Image (cartoon, rainbow over all chains, first blue to last red; front, side, top):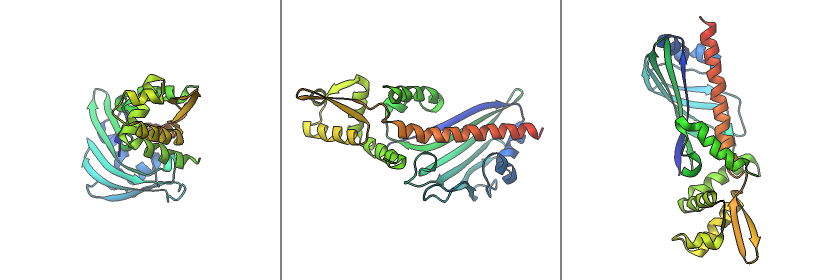
Length: 146
Length: 108
């Protein structure tokens, strides 16, 4: 049902791609900024992230490395949550993609979390993706109306 | 209604393309009479009524009676459960991204 939408974050970081790649792909490093995990940087590797259980979801995110091209591209599936949870613990079958592009003075780091299934509501969600803010404005306008 | 039930209810209600079209039209026009909705579409009057009832039950539209006519407009917080869902994840990633930057900086 519906269409999928993504959360995207893009930022220039003043470090070489190799450095950022290490932080994105070393299990102990990932645990410091994201979540406890048993990640390994090889295609087909199944791993989990563990977070606080919520409702009848055990807090385990099931993942599999889909693409791994150091130090340029990392993509893994992200499956977790439960139908009975709202918001953060809700059922989600999604894909996370990290793209590293060397630029003058550092790396352009692009992050996309794709797979949020929405009713294909053009009206409210069309501007999502790079224009996430705009989408939120239009949703906010509707939801904020008195 | 618990938030999880609300989210599921909103997603299910808007999953029907015809119903979604009705919802979008109401959102676009501000306030529409049920009769006006039937006139401007290929959908039959009973079908429109059924969609309006579903939208109302999901908290997506509110109705206002004026004599024999019922007018519909988008409920102020109807899409709230969807916004919360994505908002939670967006906050989650914004925090993790900040962690990542801090970690990179510390290990300089």
